[in-house]
Image 1 (tube, protein in one colour):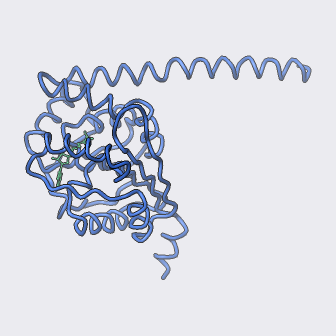
Image 2 (image 1 turned 120 degrees about the horizontal axis):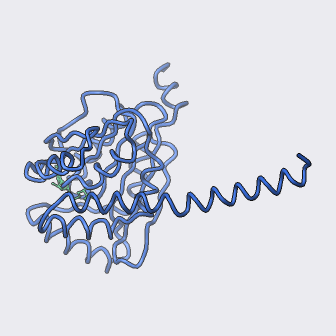
Image 3 (image 1 turned 90 degrees about the horizontal axis):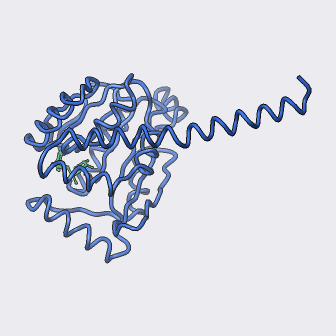
Length: 251
Ligand SMILES: C[S@@+](CC[C@H](N)C(=O)[O-])C[C@H]1O[C@@H](n2cnc3c(N)ncnc32)[C@H](O)[C@@H]1O
């Protein structure tokens, strides 16, 4: 094949594969999201629908791409299990463990997993102020949970997660920034409706980054996930650097 033909064929196949990926992947993810919503009933189905609007495909794709394909992944404060089901279905070779303090939510999560035939996810009751994983973990994420936990307990949890994370492993923390204030107030009212007995401990994006770096994570990236919805979302992507872990093990 001459060079000209090679480049032209290469470009065509590249264009084709981009087109395929652009159309197939979001459809598969949309279908999966719809199946997960349909696995719940009544008010929880409505909640799942709204929650998937708030943390929509773009966020999910981002969260998914930073998590490993194998090993144990923790969903801290998994609630009704929406996102653990999504990640489990997208990562069939990983084992997802969802932790939450709320037993009825865990029962609903287990029933949804059974209905969907998703077997690589389990749910455990745990209070994140004291609960710690028994094993080494390949990755972990916490979606809108840390602000439900007192700051000192949250910091202790971060330190212990860091210690149990395998070198090169990632921890994703999605929470609420404290700016703009109007958005924070909006989120606070929704939090009060969903969890009227909780205290809320919101931290600024800067405070989160400082705390995560002090815990040992490096690098720590902050992604402000703003869109049309009035939430000051922030996603912190934290890595347990392989070199630091090696140095720690030697020292
Ligand atoms: C805003 S919901 C988020 C649920 C889920 N991550 C999601 O994004 O749909 C917060 C969750 O944190 C859980 N939670 C609050 N305090 C907790 C604690 N101390 N230990 C474990 N889970 C807790 C609640 O039961 C609730 O399911």
